[in-house]
Amino acid sequence: LVMGALSLVGCDLDDDPFVDDHNLNSKLIGTWFCDYGGGYTDTYIITAATISHPDGMSPAPYTNASIEYVYNFSSTAGCIIIKRPDNKYNAVYFKNLGASSVLLGDAYDTSISWPAPNDSAVATPELAKERFKPENAEAWGGGPAQAGTPLTRQ
Image (tube, rainbow, N blue to C red; front, side):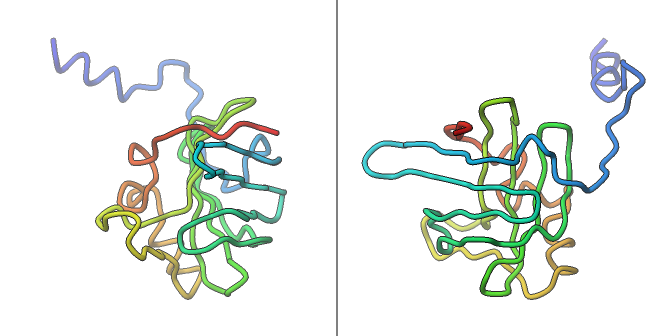
């Protein structure tokens, strides 16, 4: 009985499997904001070609980081590899994307206690694609590691 339940979890019951086209989900385009209270806010501004995180904390705020590659884990979750203005490559994870809210977060090393210095960026796009591929998401703050208060569309 337990085996039957496990096999259903892995089945595609609607015959419409998700295929990653590596394109940015257009539902992400816009300004996303959250006021956590205590003077801390979080904003992501996403266009078809760039991401800005002007109030980011780790490693530092950035504007107009170019979108270099996208891993879509599903229609509502994935990883956007960016080239920051300092010419380092990092990732922004998204999860639970809806019409008006989403969880967004810059990649970080989940094995390090936050807020320790925690810049997960690498020097090349090839290294970034390897580091942030779907199988490694949990180690870099994606997937189930991504939790918290969703940002809302502005």
